[in-house]
Every structure is written in C-alpha cells, then in structure tokens.
Length: 287
Image 1 (tube, rainbow, N blue to C red):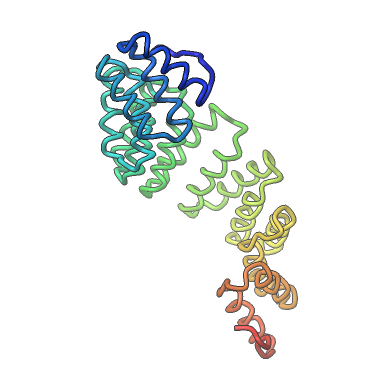
Image 2: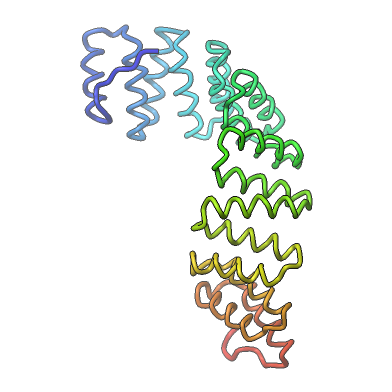
C-alpha cells in the first residue's frame, strides 16, 4: 500500500490533483484522494477515484477496501461485500478484512455468514479482540448465548479491564437466566466504571430479578443520581417501591417521569395503578 502525507481534506485533494496532472497513471494518488473525498463526504467523487485506482491497478487492495466502505455509506451492502471479497482475495491473511465483511454481512441480516467471517478472522489472528466481540454479539442476536459467553470470556482475557465486555457477557448470562453469574459480571462492570448510569441500572435489574428489592432500589437510585432524567430507572424504582409498599415514593418517581416526558403513557398507567392501590382518585387534569 502507498500512502501520501499531503495534509487533510481540501488541502490534500488539491495537492493530489496536482500530482495527477503530472502523472495520470499514478494510481495511489487516486486512492488517497478518494479517502480525502470520503472525509469531506463527497462520496460520488471518492467512488470515482477508487474506481480509477482499481482500473489502473486491479490488485490495489486499499482501493477495494475503501470503495467497500463508501458503498456501506450509500447503503449498497451487496456491492460492499463484493469489494471486500476482492480485498480478502488479495490479503487472505488479514483478519481485519474478515471482520469488516462480517460487520457488513451482519448489517444485511446474514448473521450466520457473519459468524463464519469472524471465525476466519480469529483463525487468522487469535488475539483479535474485535473478532471475539463481534462474533459474541452476533451469537447473541442468533440466540446462541453459550457461544457468546465463551467469546466474551476470550475477549476479556485480551482486555480484562473492559466494562463493555462485562456488560455484554452479563446480557448473555441474563438471557440464560444465569442470574448469579450475571450479577458477578455487573458488579465488576460497575467497579470498573462507577460513573456509568446504564451499569447501575442493569445491576438493579439483576438484583430485582433475584428478589433483592432493597439492593435494586439502591442501584436504580445511583443510576438516577448519575443521570437525573433516566426514565427507565425511575419507572423501575417506582415499581419496586410499589412492591415494597412504599407507594408515596412510587408516586414521586412517576411524577418525575411525567415531568421529564409528559407523553410517556406508561408513566400514567403505573401512577394510576399505585393510586388505585391507595384508594386515591386519578390526578386531576392528567390522562
């Protein structure tokens, strides 16, 4: 591959245009100018340059790779896959290319073929974190949660301090009703990123599923402290408060949801349910 360091954006496009005036057969200039056109969102001009680079050098893998990316931006996924097929033919040992094709195949709904690509990526590079992560998430989409758990585990060997990986594996454990191991993973995720409102929310979900309602209230509360407009945490905490018989607190949380989003129908239903339990009339002037 040939890269030309000529600046960025318009500056680089002008410089590469001058280079091509001197040598119309200099295919790397077309390839690099295509990259800069893509950066400036001139996708049509980028596609034309990638096409010219390929015409001049049909084995120029960089141009196929980048044209494939441009096809993705245009939503032409089958054409993107065709270009990535050619890139892989030219660089069969490059795990990144298999991952890229897998991502496009997954986006087009071909999940089984995407798994095959991520597997080829792992065979080419057993230390590829992205390959394990993408295959794991695709296994989740296929409902193959045991395989997802294994892949996230392998990824965690490579990146043991990643809260995202613990969160992903939590979801796979949770989908299998393996709540104890889900709880362990979310406690770890929270310890790695204690400022993550979604992590505290999900920890609350696990505690609620395990029947530890006091802990669930604490977890949802922490999520609300970190993100005051976290509607999901407010609603879940309200429901838990209602289970605990703390109806005034439940109503207070639902009032807050209505303040945040007056169109959120579920908030009115939950609040009406709590009012009914207390024998109170509906809130005047509200649905």
